View 1 (cartoon, helix red, strand yellow):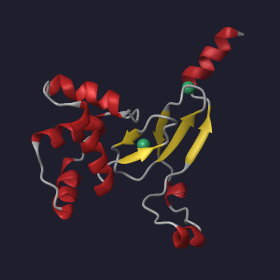
View 2 (tube, protein in one colour):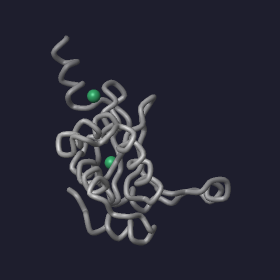
View 3 (spheres, protein in one colour):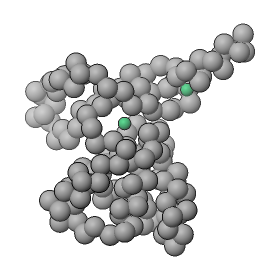
Length: 144
Ligand SMILES: [Zn+2]
Ligand SMILES: [Zn+2]
């Protein structure tokens, strides 16, 4: 679900101009729960804004990442974006590479080890659980 208010606030805080294109890219990303790649977002945004270029979408997403309005998750060769600004964690299917959101209060309170904070700049903490998703499991069962 698109949290436009949070998005507007972030833009204002970081001095980012709110343009119709940015709004559309943000709304599209926030409406996706499948952590889409730039290409997938581009295809969806293009339906509403036919003149938008891939480059603009790509740049816009990277800008969102910089201001904290979206963030990059997983992705093996392809960058994938997450527009869910609520605290959440991820289940990653090792087979189809799907990344699925889930909530768990105990994971929200996991503390980042202190030495990590000294070595790196920690921006966000999300727990990744890996395994096989439902669809892949069902496919496997059918094969047997
Ligand atoms: Zn899967
Ligand atoms: Zn997510």
